[in-house]
Amino acid sequence: MQGFGILGSAIVALIVLAAFRSAIIADVSAVDYCWRIVLGCGAIPGIAALYFRLTIPETPRYTMDVEHDVNKATSDVANYLQKTDTTDENDGPGNHVGVPKASWSDFTSYFGKWKNGKVLLGTSMSWFALDIAFYGIGLNNGIILSAIGYADTHDADFNLRAYNSLKNMALGNIIITIMGTVPGYWVTVAFVDKWGRKPIQIMGFAVLTVLFIVMGAAFNPLKEHSIPAFIVLFTLLQFFQNFGPNTTTFIVPGEVFPTRYRSTGHGISAASGKLGAIVAQVGF
Image (cartoon, rainbow, N blue to C red; front, side, top):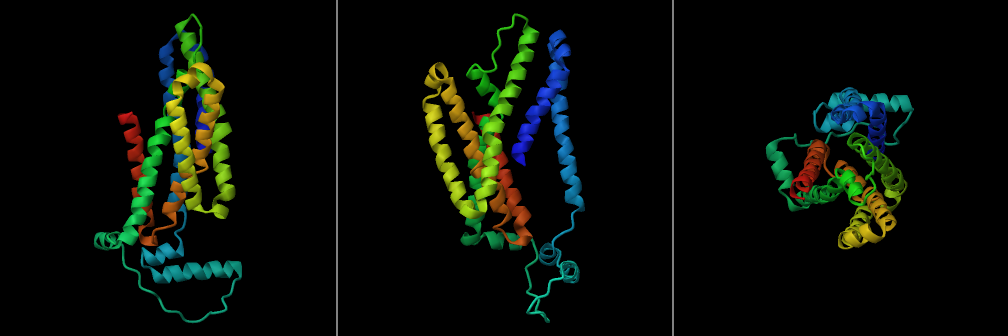
């Protein structure tokens, strides 16, 4: 859904700019209202997600392993089986396997073992490395579009030139997202269970490495002599970020940790990614 979120934000930006066209041409400071409205609109799906997160029932596994409420977990499973009219060939009394309660001492003991700690290190470093590139590029799409001359206009009036430049940036982001970002997500959806998470992530990082080397080494020649080739490479970059690590880094941490530390492991991995985003903005 992130791809659609990126596309939606660009569309909202274009709509808001169109609504404020007269105000911006009259006074360019009206742009200040535009970015605030765009950011405010981004809170709407966030509030919806928060509502569903707070109201969604917990899984029986979480209830048993984390909350240690075996009776409620058993009741939830029984209710589900009753609704689905499913019977187990091995119905009968079972033994409850004790699961350690989540605690700081258990956390350090579990992840202190290399076989467990290396998994957290791998998910965290993968997300960190990806987000240096992903946010380094994604948050500066407008700068890149301006650098290749896409957002430039030749209007004599400064306010009109500012409006058209912002409009071109929004259109450019929509085009890039439709051509690269969204298709990359859907290709991942189609192949992630067939190829597996690890092969797709390795393939994505490998292709991105090649693309970044080519685009970095040949940036000036491409900008001066072959803008279409640069746009093709930039679109491929967006595609393989999403048909690759920008999708798998979300999926893998939700699958490789035990229930009691699944959200913690995913949170540490995601926080490592945001640290990479900060490094990209501050360091470069």
